[in-house]
Image (cartoon, rainbow, N blue to C red):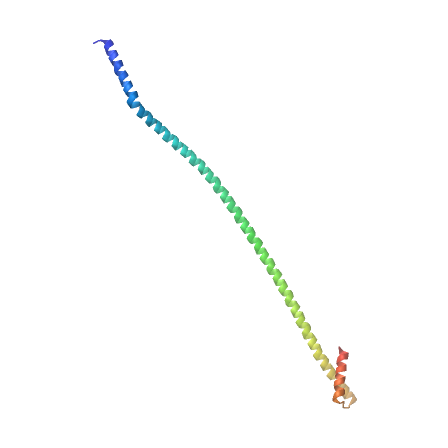
Length: 157
């Protein structure tokens, strides 16, 4: 056996093996590696997008919560304002109603007082005539009696 022949045949065999590997084995391995790299890159990109979307969602939820709190405080402020308006309106209405009742009561009192004065005037006139009749001890006819009552009533007014 010749060493040169062995080395050359091993070199040829190795060259054939390399050519076979490069031609038939290496492309599927490279494709598998590239697909795996692409899958990993896609996964990393999706993870990054998810993290970014999570941050955006967190910001949006914070903004929505802030707006909701602000809107709630506005609603509470409006409700308090409306409540105070209702209380003020009720006070005003009650005061107006009280003033109206007082005016009506004063008018009723005035009317009752006027009627009582009239009745009192008539009684005073009758007492005055009765007293005058006793003093005079004489009878006065009805026409003169009526005239005296009306003149005394006019004097008392």
